[in-house]
Length: 354
Image (cartoon, rainbow, N blue to C red; front, side):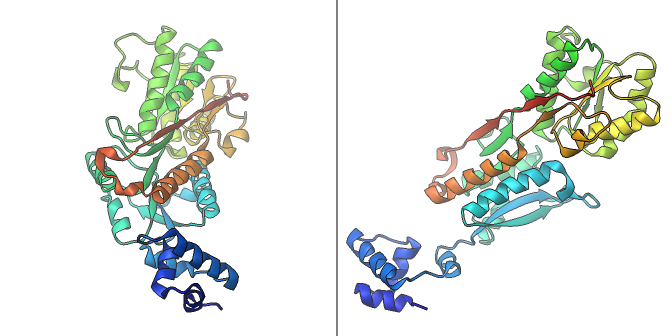
């Protein structure tokens, strides 16, 4: 194995100079750099990656922060599986490893601590919520100039690095499709308001309903909705089943003819709960989900839904982190940091549940 000492001897420089060339540390004359690279090529010298990372004070890891919820199989959920696959592909193609870090609900965030301990060189954050504590920690992360990116969560009024999908337009298209099929009493099964995508889907639903004259101008918040038209779950199948008794009662009284659900898991839980009451989707009522998960394709009947490019969102988030890392822009602080908010398009997938 060729050593750094041999490269230094052939190039006529010190070992420290060879180290600086390969680690990109400190000022360097171009002629000296080329001598070292030429000697390394002739000797077939390959620097040790671990040693390089140590010298650069880098770990070689992209951190991915995930919510930890006991008894929830997070890796089996379509959203997390797709986003993680996208992050992993970009990291692998860029020569990085992916380090998963779990955070329990209600647990304080210390994103900057991951960087201070040199566990990660950049960080992709999933499952962030809009709370004062979370905003404060993200502001610190941003002001310190660390490479990071939020996925599927945005914060009004903040200049955070984000990759998101156009959930307003996605839900708008879904509800417009129901209205186009003659539906007039359309209930909305939404997720938690702590997530920005829940608010976005509410805005899309509300816009479509108001344009069609199905909601009055007095409806500005979910609490203003007609009785039995708004339910809030937590994006789990179980929360869809919990909403079934109330929605079933409205169906029985002729007060509803359709439901728009904020994700496929809740839609499938709701279908299951309503089926137990004798209501068949696509016949007794129409329903549209959101995500275009694999499960949506095998329901009975197959579920009309909104496709979200989760894989691409994960890949792009990792790309943005690596761009920040390699550009050296982490040295820029606060308002000078070049933040981006990428928004990807969604697509309505028509099947047989309407």
